[in-house]
Length: 297
Image 1 (cartoon, rainbow, N blue to C red):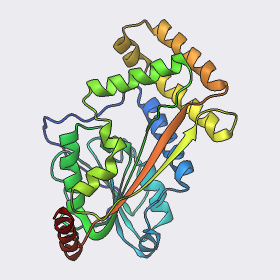
Image 2 (image 1 turned 120 degrees about the vertical axis):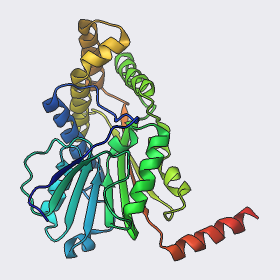
Image 3 (image 1 turned 90 degrees about the horizontal axis):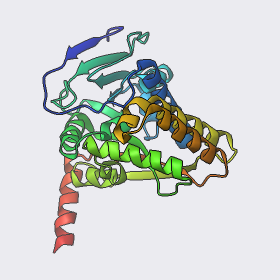
Image 4 (image 1 turned 90 degrees about the vertical axis):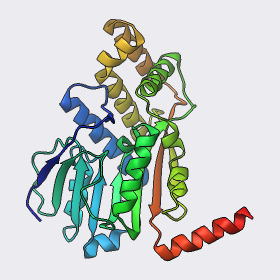
C-alpha cells in the first residue's frame, strides 16, 4: 500500500453533501475532535464491533465519510497489520504518516471505488446520516455491497433528547433542528437507524446500544459536554443568527444565557447511539427469507 494515496474521483452530482454551519476549518476540525472524544468516552473505546482479533491478525477496514481521518489514523496505529481506507468527498488530512492508511477522495453518492465483498469492517459516524433519506439508502446499499459476508458495519450518532432545561438552550436546540429540516436532513435516520438496516434484508438483526449523557451536573464528562455544545453554537453563530433573523449580538446573548442554564443543575441530556450489523452470507439470507415468509402466513 502506498505511504499516502489521495485519489480524486469526484463527479458532478445532484445530491448535496451536508456541510456544518461553520466556515472556519480549524473550528470545524475542533468540532470533529470533540465528537471523536465523546464517542470514545461513551462507548469505552474506538472500535465497538467484535473485530479486534481480526484487526490484530490483519484485515481490511473502510471508514466512510472519514473527513480529516481522526478515527482511522488512531485505530491504524493500534493495528499495523490491517489495511485501512478512508473515503470522503473532501478529505482534510494532508499529513498521512501511516503506511497502512490510504485516503481516497471520491463522490460518496456514486458507486464506491471498490469491488464487491472487499472489507471485513466498515465504520462511520453521524455525518453519514446527514443526508436526504433516499440518498442515505443508496449509500447504505453501496456500503453493504463492499462489506464481506460475515463482516461488520458500525455507525455512531448523537442527537438531542426531550429532556431539556432552560428556555435559552431550548431555543438554540430547536433552531438547530429546524435548520437541519430545511437542509432536508431526516432525523428519523438517527432515531431508527437499526430498522433501516434490518429492512435491507442484508444483515442479521442489528445490535443497538444507546446511552444518555447528562450535560453539566458537576462531573467532568458532563462539563465537557457543556463545553462542546457552547463551542458548537458559538462557531455556528453567523449561520444560525441569520436563520433566526436576529443580530449577532442577540445570538451571543442567547448563548450566554444558555451557558448559565447549563452551568446550573441541568436536566439536559444528549443521547448517543451505536449500531452494529453483520452482513449475512447467502445461506443466512435464505434462512432469513424463509423465516419472514413463514411469519407472514
